[in-house]
Image (cartoon, rainbow, N blue to C red):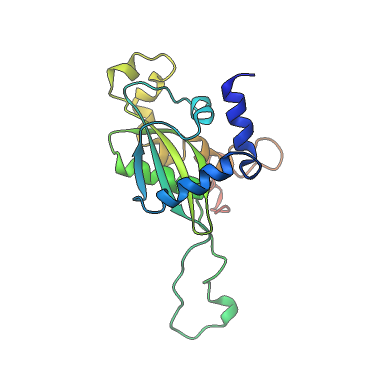
Length: 194
């Protein structure tokens, strides 16, 4: 059994393995850091490698902190029934992972988001690591596995829901019966989705 399988098995159930203690120690430091931090190497090497990460020039990893839960809506001042105020239990149309990817892309505007994965959470925040690729770097252009991202049609892909998390949120993992309203997009079908 290779090292990546050991790492993957440990992260599958973090509360039952050595990962629990590691996360407890790391989160104390992560809470004090800024919301978007560039890191030297991935926390979950197995997951990063499976999503396309390579330790080479033109690829960086960023850890992003995003708040958990639904929207923080302000209470309306006008008179309304409490049931129709629309303050609690209002959720975003995007997943928290997609929000994390977009924030990383805004911080590094010359790079494109390749993928992202979960690295931890507490009662207040979730942390994701986002893999970013520089589409203009010669090392990326020469890489046959990654040079597809250098074409113009992948520009701003994270903001158009073209990453893995974006496609999942748009319902594009489903096809066939029951998925008639998700293509070409939710907006194209009378805005029935989130």
